[in-house]
Each structure stands twice: as C-alpha cells, then as structure tokens.
Length: 410
Image 1 (tube, rainbow, N blue to C red):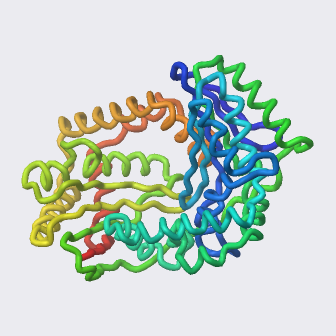
Image 2 (spheres, rainbow, N blue to C red; image 1 turned 90 degrees about the horizontal axis):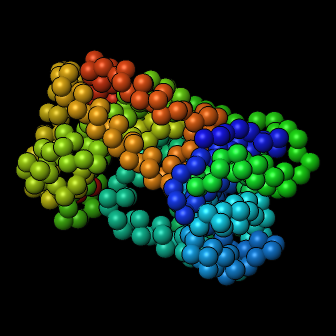
Image 3 (cartoon, rainbow, N blue to C red; image 1 turned 45 degrees about the vertical axis):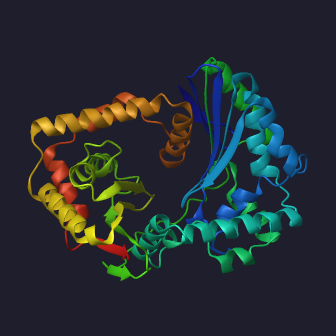
C-alpha cells in the first residue's frame, strides 16, 4: 500500500488487491455534526443531490455513466463524513475516480431536481419512523447526545428538509467540500506506483494552482454530557424494541477503542457464539436477533445493545442482559475464553480485509481520522496486548449501572 498527501491537500491511499474489479472512494470529512448555520439534514440532502447534475452531466447521464460499464455508484452520510464510492472494472478506474471528483466539486443542483430529491428524502424519513428498530436507536442517540451536534438526526426532520434550498447546498459544498477534508482511496489489481502517479495527475488537474492545503477547518470538539435516562415510550406495537447503552471511547483513545471493539464483539458481534446471541437467541429463542454496536466519533463514542422481542419476553431479556453485563464487570474472562474471542475477532478482521469495497471505505475513514492507515501487524499487536483485566475495566466504564441508559418502545 502507498499513501500520502497531494500538494493540494487531498490525502490518498492505493492498495493492490482483487482481480478484475476495482474500488474507489472519495471520503469527505463533514457530516451531520457540521451543519451549524444550515437546516438539519443538509449534509445528507447534499449527498442525495450531488447525483442530480453537474455543469457537464445531467442526472440521467450520471445515473447511467457507470451502469453502462457494468459498474456501480453510491454514497452515504454519517455524523462525521460523506462518502461517494464506485465499483468498476479495473480498466474503468480512471473514469470512476474522475466522476467522484466531478460530483463533489461541480454539482450545480438544478431546482427541479432538488424538488424531486426532496420527495425521496421525505419518504425516507417516514419509512424510518415506520421502522421501530431503526427509530428506537435514532431516538436513543438523540437522547444520549442531547444538546450536542452528534444528537442531530442524519436525515433531518420533515420540517427542516423542507427548508433546505439550492443556496444551502451550494454554500455547504463550497465551505465543507475542500481538499484538506478529502481522502481518495483505491483498491485495484494494478501496480501501486502506477496508481499513485495517476492519482497525483488527477488531483493536480482537479485542483490546479493549489500548492498547499488551506488553513485547517477542523471542527471544534466537545464531549457530550447528557444525564443518564431510562425512558419507555408506548408505541402500541406487538413487539418491544430496546436499546441499552452508554458513552464509549472516541476514535482517538487508541488502546481503549480497540478494547471496546473487542468487548462489543464478545457481547453481541455477528457470530452466534457471542454472549448475548448465545443466551437470548440460541438458548431461549426470545429474540430473532440481538447485537452490540460500537460507533466511534472524534470526541466520544457510543456502545449500545439493541434487540426486539415479543412483549411478554421483554423482562426475561432485560434480566438476562443485566446478568451477562454484571458477570463481565465482576469476573475477568479466563485465558482460554479470551484467546478464543481474540482469534475470532482477528479472523473476522482478516476476512473483511479481503473484501475490496470494505477495505477501500475503511482506508478512507482511517485517512480522515488519523492521516494514516495502521499496518495489519500493528492492529494485531494491539489486540494481542488486550488483557482480561482491560476488558473487565472497559465493561465497568461503559456498562456500570450508574452510567447505562435505556430506551424501550412498547
């Protein structure tokens, strides 16, 4: 892998991988938390509308530009970033990379297309409200980050999205889509030196005359401090939906974040032998699925257990979860169990590293967050250094009764 920073300030990384298919992503370090001075939902609405026309391509041309080559074009918005990414045959990699930058820097946001996309986003908001499993987590996060920029919904609200105009989109792109906030990442079965040369040529053409990054526009960071809550909302659903969680280490708490990631995987990772899955699904059949997610932000993080169950089983589920969390706080894992869980996580990471798209997106996140991509050996070493006592301490930090918050939809 080769990584660096172009003279214009765009960070980049290229890695040889895959076979006939290439992956490229343009990650931009702005998201929902960067909407100060804009209506809520502007970041997400911008992401939707960059596909609706540039000075050189109409919405219909953009929609079919990679499709006719057998490729795919997509994008997503998070609390801290907007990512545009493409999957193409490796011989079409240059076309895909140029298109990503064209969308990010040359979108014109036609008024008629904005209105079309506004209807799409408003329908998306309604569909989320109709999905209690999605809505309960968003509400939990809003309560946990109450009064903090991270508490804003990514989609915005119906009222706020109706306020977003063309001038907001143009200003958001002008102020936020700047070279020093961008990272271009590529995974393709091509010589890395050749890919780097092509990337630097593309960036020099894309940002001519910019020989050094603009002054940093790093967002001000502040940790949220909302009080603990235990809230029940009657939704008149046949199923109960629940979120149990708390603050967790941020992106920049390096040893702690890896320990928290392992703890989340042990508790409710994708494997059927995770503690929560084994007890609530495999042993008792109380839930169809249960997970423990860990989301990291620049100044904080959130770890949350989420599940849905028949209402008569809710108390049994809550008691079982409380027992598992108490055991993790009080009893360090045995050496054998720790070794097994560590090997499982390392195996999951190795398998995901073979997936070109996931690898490409992860590289972009790393460049935006730390300006570098940690070698696999460094990650393995850090995970090997995690002890049972460290995991117990992390369980106490996140899941102590006085720190945990709960939201129930009944």
